[in-house]
Image (cartoon, rainbow, N blue to C red; front, side, top):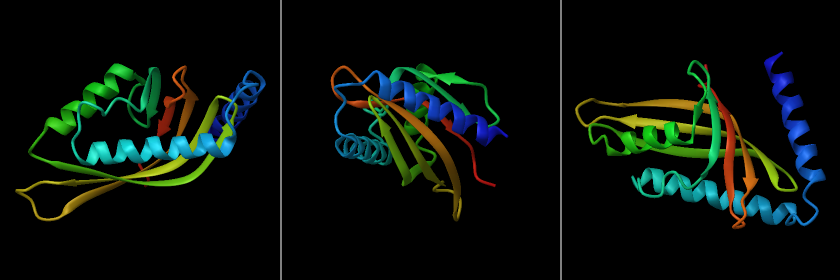
Amino acid sequence: MIRRGIRTLLIGLLLLGGASASSAQPAAEAEAAIRAALARWTADFNARNAGTICDLFATELRYDYRGFPERDYQAICDLLQRSLADRSKTYTYALEIKEILVSGDLAVVRLVWTLTIARPDTAGTIKAEEPGMDIFRKQADGSWKIVRYIAYEAP
C-alpha cells in the first residue's frame, strides 16, 4: 500500500516536472550529472570532507527515514557533520544506483546505500543497507540537488 502511494506520488512529480521544463537538458546528460553528484558526495563522505558534505542537498530538503520524524536540510547537515567529526568511529558509504528516471527538471533515483561502521576498539564492523529514493531538482546554477528523499534500513 505504501509503495503504491509512493509510486503514484513519484509519477505525479515526474509528470509535473516534465510539463514545466521545456528547456530541460537531455535525460542522458542529466543522468550523468546526477551520477557524478552522487559519486562526489560518496567520496567526500568517505574522506570526511565536512565542508562539502551538504552540497548534494537543496535547502528546501525534506527527508523521511523509517522510524524517525521528518527532517530538513539543517537537520541532515548537522547530523552528517557530527558523524564525520566523531573520531571514535569510521563511517564508510558505498552506493548502488538501481535506476534514474529523468523528466524535465526533476529526477527520481532508486538506490541502495551501504553504510559500514567500524570502531578501532571493537573487532569487526557493522553494515546497514539503506534502500531509498532520492528526488533531485535541477537548480538555477545547473546543478542537481536532492529536494526529497525516502529511505529505510533493509530487514
